[in-house]
Length: 58
Image 1 (cartoon, rainbow, N blue to C red):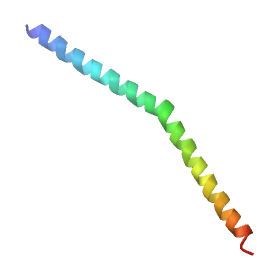
Image 2 (cartoon, rainbow, N blue to C red):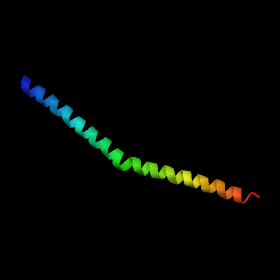
Image 3 (tube, one colour):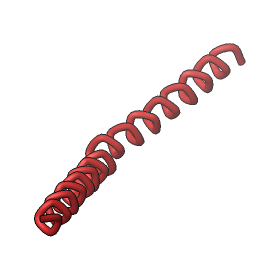
Image 4 (cartoon, helix red, strand yellow):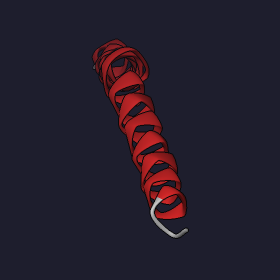
């Protein structure tokens, strides 16, 4: 019974760490580039808005 408990706990920890690694990897490969791209679009929109106002001010 002692070996079963150790094996079970090791399996739970290994599975949890594998899931955490997969989530972290997904975030790093998929979510973060999308957020970076959205931030660049936002910055470009701000610059274009400032440029547009400056051009029409006089």
